[in-house]
Image (cartoon, rainbow over all chains, first blue to last red; front, side, top):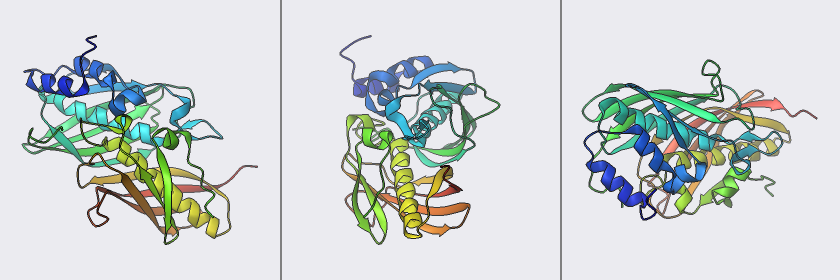
Length: 161
Length: 133
Protein backbone atom coordinates (compact mmCIF):
# COMPACT_ATOMS: atom_id res chain seq x y z
CA UNK A 1 0.00 0.00 0.00
CA UNK A 2 1.12 3.50 -0.73
CA UNK A 3 1.80 5.05 2.67
CA UNK A 4 1.40 8.59 1.36
CA UNK A 5 -2.22 7.96 0.49
CA UNK A 6 -4.68 9.78 2.73
CA UNK A 7 -8.45 9.30 2.81
CA UNK A 8 -8.74 12.66 1.08
CA UNK A 9 -6.66 11.88 -1.97
CA UNK A 10 -8.02 8.34 -2.12
CA UNK A 11 -11.48 9.87 -2.51
CA UNK A 12 -10.25 12.34 -5.09
CA UNK A 13 -8.64 9.72 -7.22
CA UNK A 14 -11.49 7.28 -6.99
CA UNK A 15 -13.94 10.02 -7.99
CA UNK A 16 -12.08 10.40 -11.25
CA UNK A 17 -12.19 6.74 -12.14
CA UNK A 18 -14.49 5.73 -14.94
CA UNK A 19 -15.59 2.43 -13.47
CA UNK A 20 -16.43 1.91 -9.82
CA UNK A 21 -14.32 -0.91 -8.48
CA UNK A 22 -15.88 -2.21 -5.21
CA UNK A 23 -12.79 -4.19 -4.17
CA UNK A 24 -10.49 -1.21 -4.67
CA UNK A 25 -12.79 1.13 -2.77
CA UNK A 26 -13.13 -1.51 -0.06
CA UNK A 27 -9.36 -1.76 0.30
CA UNK A 28 -9.27 1.98 0.92
CA UNK A 29 -11.81 1.87 3.73
CA UNK A 30 -9.09 0.91 6.15
CA UNK A 31 -6.92 3.99 5.66
CA UNK A 32 -8.64 5.71 8.50
CA UNK A 33 -11.85 7.38 9.40
CA UNK A 34 -14.73 5.56 11.00
CA UNK A 35 -14.69 2.54 8.68
CA UNK A 36 -11.00 2.10 9.49
CA UNK A 37 -11.71 2.29 13.21
CA UNK A 38 -14.47 -0.32 12.98
CA UNK A 39 -12.19 -2.47 10.84
CA UNK A 40 -14.54 -2.79 7.88
CA UNK A 41 -13.39 -4.93 5.00
CA UNK A 42 -14.64 -5.58 1.51
CA UNK A 43 -15.77 -9.20 1.16
CA UNK A 44 -17.42 -9.82 -2.20
CA UNK A 45 -19.73 -8.34 -4.79
CA UNK A 46 -21.88 -9.20 -7.78
CA UNK A 47 -23.57 -7.02 -10.41
CA UNK A 48 -26.34 -5.98 -8.00
CA UNK A 49 -24.93 -6.54 -4.52
CA UNK A 50 -21.94 -6.05 -2.30
CA UNK A 51 -20.74 -7.56 0.99
CA UNK A 52 -18.65 -5.87 3.69
CA UNK A 53 -17.68 -7.23 7.10
CA UNK A 54 -15.99 -6.44 10.41
CA UNK A 55 -14.81 -8.54 13.34
CA UNK A 56 -16.26 -8.53 16.86
CA UNK A 57 -14.07 -6.48 19.17
CA UNK A 58 -14.22 -5.73 22.87
CA UNK A 59 -14.25 -1.96 22.36
CA UNK A 60 -17.28 -2.22 20.05
CA UNK A 61 -19.44 -3.93 22.68
CA UNK A 62 -22.75 -2.36 23.65
CA UNK A 63 -23.69 -4.56 26.59
CA UNK A 64 -20.89 -5.48 28.97
CA UNK A 65 -22.78 -8.30 30.73
CA UNK A 66 -23.30 -10.27 27.53
CA UNK A 67 -20.54 -9.03 25.23
CA UNK A 68 -23.10 -8.28 22.52
CA UNK A 69 -21.93 -5.72 19.96
CA UNK A 70 -23.32 -2.21 20.07
CA UNK A 71 -25.72 -1.51 17.24
CA UNK A 72 -23.78 1.62 16.19
CA UNK A 73 -21.09 -0.30 14.29
CA UNK A 74 -23.82 -2.38 12.61
CA UNK A 75 -25.52 0.84 11.44
CA UNK A 76 -22.17 2.04 10.10
CA UNK A 77 -21.54 -1.24 8.27
CA UNK A 78 -25.02 -1.23 6.71
CA UNK A 79 -24.67 2.46 5.82
CA UNK A 80 -21.40 1.79 3.99
CA UNK A 81 -22.59 -1.41 2.32
CA UNK A 82 -25.89 0.04 1.09
CA UNK A 83 -24.06 3.18 -0.09
CA UNK A 84 -21.54 1.15 -2.05
CA UNK A 85 -24.33 -1.00 -3.49
CA UNK A 86 -25.52 2.04 -5.44
CA UNK A 87 -22.16 2.52 -7.16
CA UNK A 88 -21.81 -1.24 -7.60
CA UNK A 89 -25.10 -1.29 -9.48
CA UNK A 90 -24.49 1.79 -11.63
CA UNK A 91 -20.82 0.96 -12.10
CA UNK A 92 -19.90 4.55 -11.40
CA UNK A 93 -19.00 6.55 -8.33
CA UNK A 94 -21.32 9.50 -7.69
CA UNK A 95 -21.35 11.65 -4.54
CA UNK A 96 -24.39 10.90 -2.39
CA UNK A 97 -25.64 11.36 1.16
CA UNK A 98 -27.86 9.19 3.34
CA UNK A 99 -31.38 10.63 3.38
CA UNK A 100 -33.09 7.95 5.38
CA UNK A 101 -32.06 4.64 6.92
CA UNK A 102 -34.22 2.21 8.82
CA UNK A 103 -32.78 -0.77 10.63
CA UNK A 104 -34.63 -3.62 12.30
CA UNK A 105 -32.59 -5.59 14.80
CA UNK A 106 -33.94 -9.08 14.26
CA UNK A 107 -31.78 -10.68 16.97
CA UNK A 108 -28.64 -10.04 19.01
CA UNK A 109 -25.36 -10.79 17.24
CA UNK A 110 -23.40 -13.64 18.83
CA UNK A 111 -20.34 -12.27 20.70
CA UNK A 112 -17.06 -13.07 18.98
CA UNK A 113 -18.55 -13.59 15.53
CA UNK A 114 -17.73 -11.56 12.42
CA UNK A 115 -20.60 -9.42 11.15
CA UNK A 116 -21.29 -9.51 7.41
CA UNK A 117 -23.53 -7.02 5.59
CA UNK A 118 -24.99 -7.86 2.22
CA UNK A 119 -26.60 -4.92 0.45
CA UNK A 120 -28.27 -4.22 -2.85
CA UNK A 121 -29.54 -1.18 -4.67
CA UNK A 122 -32.97 -2.11 -6.05
CA UNK A 123 -33.88 1.16 -7.78
CA UNK A 124 -31.96 4.20 -9.02
CA UNK A 125 -33.51 7.44 -10.14
CA UNK A 126 -31.81 10.62 -11.29
CA UNK A 127 -31.57 12.11 -7.82
CA UNK A 128 -32.20 9.14 -5.53
CA UNK A 129 -31.18 5.55 -4.99
CA UNK A 130 -33.20 2.98 -3.02
CA UNK A 131 -31.32 0.33 -1.09
CA UNK A 132 -31.84 -2.62 1.22
CA UNK A 133 -29.65 -5.09 3.01
CA UNK A 134 -29.12 -7.48 5.86
CA UNK A 135 -26.40 -8.08 8.41
CA UNK A 136 -25.68 -11.59 9.67
CA UNK A 137 -23.07 -13.37 11.78
CA UNK A 138 -22.60 -16.46 9.66
CA UNK A 139 -25.98 -17.52 8.31
CA UNK A 140 -27.64 -15.13 5.81
CA UNK A 141 -30.96 -16.89 6.48
CA UNK A 142 -30.80 -15.92 10.15
CA UNK A 143 -29.87 -12.22 10.00
CA UNK A 144 -29.13 -9.99 12.97
CA UNK A 145 -30.42 -6.88 11.20
CA UNK A 146 -32.41 -5.76 8.18
CA UNK A 147 -31.95 -2.34 6.55
CA UNK A 148 -33.89 -0.19 4.10
CA UNK A 149 -32.76 3.25 3.04
CA UNK A 150 -32.56 6.03 0.48
CA UNK A 151 -29.49 7.88 -0.73
CA UNK A 152 -29.70 11.29 -2.32
CA UNK A 153 -27.29 12.02 -5.14
CA UNK A 154 -25.59 15.39 -4.64
CA UNK A 155 -23.11 17.71 -6.33
CA UNK A 156 -19.47 16.75 -6.04
CA UNK A 157 -18.62 20.25 -4.86
CA UNK A 158 -18.59 20.41 -1.07
CA UNK A 159 -19.16 16.66 -0.72
CA UNK A 160 -15.80 16.35 1.00
CA UNK A 161 -13.69 18.96 2.76
CA UNK B 1 -28.24 11.17 39.85
CA UNK B 2 -27.90 9.27 36.63
CA UNK B 3 -26.35 5.88 37.08
CA UNK B 4 -26.25 5.40 33.33
CA UNK B 5 -22.99 3.71 32.36
CA UNK B 6 -21.96 4.15 28.76
CA UNK B 7 -20.82 0.89 27.08
CA UNK B 8 -17.34 0.32 25.61
CA UNK B 9 -18.41 1.35 22.07
CA UNK B 10 -19.70 4.71 23.31
CA UNK B 11 -16.56 5.33 25.36
CA UNK B 12 -14.30 4.33 22.44
CA UNK B 13 -16.09 6.89 20.29
CA UNK B 14 -15.69 9.56 22.96
CA UNK B 15 -19.35 9.85 23.93
CA UNK B 16 -20.19 11.36 27.30
CA UNK B 17 -23.18 12.50 29.28
CA UNK B 18 -23.09 16.26 28.96
CA UNK B 19 -26.01 17.19 31.20
CA UNK B 20 -29.56 16.33 32.11
CA UNK B 21 -32.25 18.18 30.19
CA UNK B 22 -35.82 17.77 31.47
CA UNK B 23 -35.15 14.27 32.72
CA UNK B 24 -33.22 13.05 29.67
CA UNK B 25 -29.43 12.83 29.47
CA UNK B 26 -27.85 14.85 26.67
CA UNK B 27 -25.14 12.79 25.00
CA UNK B 28 -22.18 14.73 23.60
CA UNK B 29 -19.38 13.62 21.34
CA UNK B 30 -16.50 15.51 19.79
CA UNK B 31 -15.50 15.09 16.18
CA UNK B 32 -12.45 12.86 15.70
CA UNK B 33 -10.73 10.88 12.94
CA UNK B 34 -12.50 7.72 14.07
CA UNK B 35 -15.88 9.45 13.68
CA UNK B 36 -15.18 10.58 10.12
CA UNK B 37 -17.14 9.33 7.14
CA UNK B 38 -16.47 11.18 3.93
CA UNK B 39 -13.52 13.49 4.64
CA UNK B 40 -14.52 16.46 6.76
CA UNK B 41 -17.87 15.12 7.99
CA UNK B 42 -19.32 12.77 10.60
CA UNK B 43 -20.07 9.23 9.42
CA UNK B 44 -23.82 8.61 9.22
CA UNK B 45 -23.38 5.44 11.27
CA UNK B 46 -21.70 7.42 14.03
CA UNK B 47 -24.61 9.87 14.11
CA UNK B 48 -26.86 6.80 14.30
CA UNK B 49 -24.77 5.43 17.16
CA UNK B 50 -25.06 8.69 19.10
CA UNK B 51 -28.82 8.84 18.50
CA UNK B 52 -29.18 5.28 19.78
CA UNK B 53 -27.12 6.01 22.87
CA UNK B 54 -29.29 9.06 23.62
CA UNK B 55 -32.41 6.94 23.14
CA UNK B 56 -31.06 4.24 25.42
CA UNK B 57 -30.03 6.81 28.04
CA UNK B 58 -33.40 8.59 27.95
CA UNK B 59 -35.22 5.29 28.41
CA UNK B 60 -32.87 4.13 31.18
CA UNK B 61 -33.52 7.38 33.04
CA UNK B 62 -37.28 6.99 32.61
CA UNK B 63 -37.22 3.38 33.84
CA UNK B 64 -35.12 4.38 36.86
CA UNK B 65 -37.69 7.09 37.63
CA UNK B 66 -40.42 4.46 37.54
CA UNK B 67 -38.38 2.50 40.05
CA UNK B 68 -38.04 -0.60 37.89
CA UNK B 69 -34.97 -2.40 36.60
CA UNK B 70 -35.56 -3.73 33.11
CA UNK B 71 -33.27 -4.96 30.40
CA UNK B 72 -33.48 -2.72 27.35
CA UNK B 73 -32.87 -3.98 23.83
CA UNK B 74 -33.33 -2.01 20.61
CA UNK B 75 -35.96 -3.41 18.21
CA UNK B 76 -35.51 -0.89 15.43
CA UNK B 77 -34.44 2.60 14.46
CA UNK B 78 -35.52 4.83 11.60
CA UNK B 79 -33.29 7.82 10.98
CA UNK B 80 -33.74 10.90 8.86
CA UNK B 81 -30.48 12.61 8.04
CA UNK B 82 -31.29 16.32 7.85
CA UNK B 83 -27.90 18.02 7.55
CA UNK B 84 -24.28 17.03 7.11
CA UNK B 85 -22.51 16.38 10.41
CA UNK B 86 -19.83 19.09 10.64
CA UNK B 87 -16.47 18.61 12.38
CA UNK B 88 -17.61 20.01 15.70
CA UNK B 89 -19.30 18.69 18.85
CA UNK B 90 -22.42 16.63 18.31
CA UNK B 91 -25.28 16.39 20.83
CA UNK B 92 -28.28 14.11 21.05
CA UNK B 93 -31.25 13.83 23.39
CA UNK B 94 -34.11 11.39 23.51
CA UNK B 95 -37.71 11.85 24.56
CA UNK B 96 -39.60 8.81 25.81
CA UNK B 97 -42.99 8.88 24.10
CA UNK B 98 -44.24 5.82 25.90
CA UNK B 99 -42.67 3.24 28.19
CA UNK B 100 -45.00 0.31 28.64
CA UNK B 101 -44.35 -3.05 30.24
CA UNK B 102 -42.86 -4.74 27.18
CA UNK B 103 -42.12 -2.03 24.64
CA UNK B 104 -40.98 1.58 24.75
CA UNK B 105 -41.09 4.20 21.99
CA UNK B 106 -38.49 6.96 21.95
CA UNK B 107 -37.85 9.95 19.69
CA UNK B 108 -34.35 11.32 19.47
CA UNK B 109 -32.76 14.37 17.88
CA UNK B 110 -29.12 15.23 17.22
CA UNK B 111 -27.78 18.73 16.72
CA UNK B 112 -24.54 20.70 16.74
CA UNK B 113 -23.98 24.39 17.46
CA UNK B 114 -27.63 25.34 16.92
CA UNK B 115 -30.24 23.31 18.84
CA UNK B 116 -32.90 24.47 16.37
CA UNK B 117 -31.09 23.08 13.34
CA UNK B 118 -31.04 19.31 13.92
CA UNK B 119 -28.52 17.17 12.08
CA UNK B 120 -30.65 14.03 12.34
CA UNK B 121 -33.78 12.77 13.99
CA UNK B 122 -35.09 9.29 14.55
CA UNK B 123 -37.58 7.13 16.33
CA UNK B 124 -36.65 3.92 18.07
CA UNK B 125 -38.61 1.05 19.55
CA UNK B 126 -37.14 -0.87 22.46
CA UNK B 127 -38.05 -4.19 23.97
CA UNK B 128 -38.24 -4.29 27.75
CA UNK B 129 -37.76 -7.49 29.70
CA UNK B 130 -37.14 -8.35 33.35
CA UNK B 131 -33.47 -8.56 34.15
CA UNK B 132 -32.39 -12.12 34.91
CA UNK B 133 -30.91 -12.41 38.37
